[in-house]
Image (cartoon, rainbow, N blue to C red; front, top):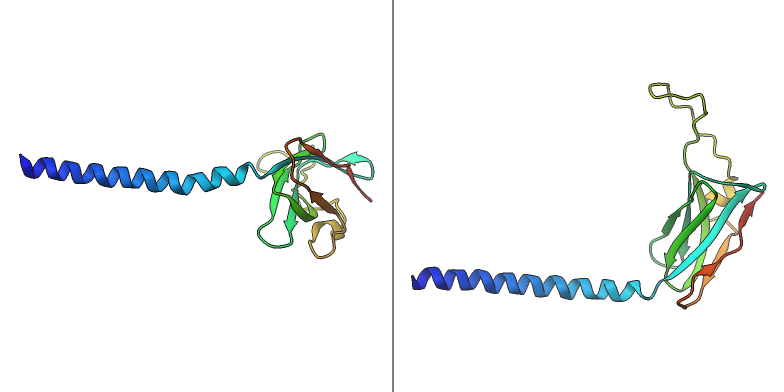
Length: 142
């Protein structure tokens, strides 16, 4: 009986240690999330909203962050403060006559190449710390 009890106690100690480790790892992630600011904006091409695309925010260092563009051309992202180069990546636009089983046509991106590349995009965003959402002007691509 003593051997079973001590084994059960050992498992409990391991479980407690594992739970403490998980909480310790999770807390810094929660803290970092409060550092982010909601950024709202819209994307258009020659005055018409762009849908089926992603807005990517490239910081000076680190990994890019993205936001899906809604059918009305608007997007929302949560970004830490900093300066970003912005790119627009379009998805595949299928013709209205396309149906399941039809061959997929080649993608014809309607966003000019300079906005699809981090190296050539002149779209920039500066996000400052704050609690209120940051509303960006519409990116009207030409």
